[in-house]
Length: 293
Image 1 (cartoon, rainbow, N blue to C red):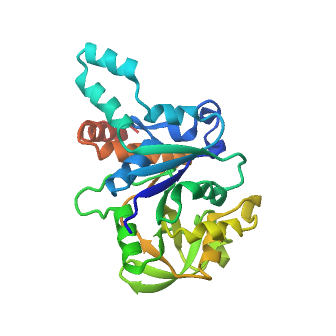
Image 2: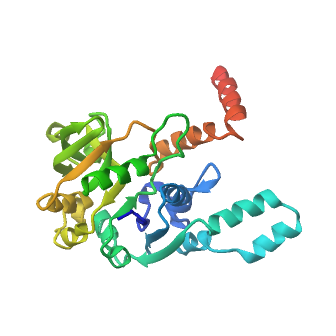
Image 3: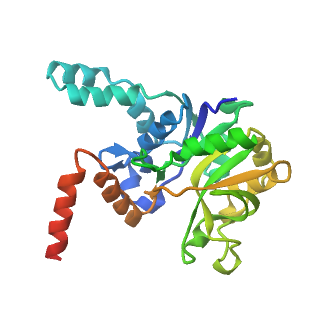
């Protein structure tokens, strides 16, 4: 069965982005000229996903407002002859069939994904972490979510995206113990959430993209609180591995982390450089600025 549904967890408190996230959901902080969560929705749509549930928390009404029609704004732009801006506004409102579910308590990433159970039902589904932006592929870059869906279809199993992470940073991620299957694909023998550096089984860490079988929800309901006192998705996947194989895809293309301030700045630069309208003049500015430093 084709993967047509996605869960986007967006309920976190965003404490790493204070003070900006005090009044603005971190998912709504713009990266170049779009909020981070819009990149996630657009990525899902590129992969053929038509139904999306966004898991939110209290105080994040602006996320829903962003994806709703804004008739007064549309009328104003139309009357002013601002057709390009009008097209952008209509594009956002017409991206996908988006619904919302509230995570009542901040009990962790796995718990947030679990809130999508009623929405997903018995279907395979994608999980997209909006803190990690996967840009639209250019040149020969692979389409990450499309690759994950293709691997799921081949093996009829859950599959997660991983990338090589430096030894210094490995303890910030869920890390896999891989068994090679073919180029870029591994069967996962074990997973550890945020292991100490000297206990990490590899340098391959999960990077916020998953295509999962619905049996994961049963595993998450049996998952106890783990690292940080939270219900971790990694722990749920470990339980699922007792029932069925799970695979990892080593993504060779770019993934930009916008969940940390320094990485957010890097991501803003990289995404601007990829833009047809901004890339050339921005590159010229950066070159001139670097000469002055």
